Image (tube, rainbow, N blue to C red; front, top):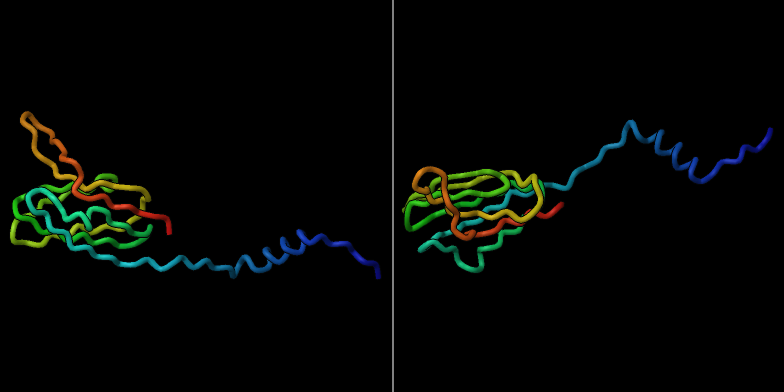
Amino acid sequence: MGVIPVSLAGCFLALALILAPGLTVTAAKADEVTFDLRVERGRVPANLRLIRVKQGDVVKLRWSTDRTTILHLHGYDIEMKIEPDAMAEMSFTARATGRFPVSVHKPKQGGGHTHDPPLIHVEVHPR
């Protein structure tokens, strides 16, 4: 009986082909994260102006305000109106990574809208 030379790379390839049909990849568990944000006189407290989450997280931004405000989460194209003395929830799954501002939309005469500087930024980091 002769000896058949086998390279180490060939062994790994053969092993990978044998295991591949049963191979499962388990994704890291996504979290559900909630942030309570209060807009007073057009501002959010400094310690809440940067929200950091992981890709795949279910993010809930719970907003309250002292005056009627329209918010826009850029990059996710979520817009919502918040009213005084009520809690409003902006909920989304953080699929896109990057840094996304939440701005106040103000109607512009003649149509369209303008943005104030961002109230907060949401940073979505890869998992």
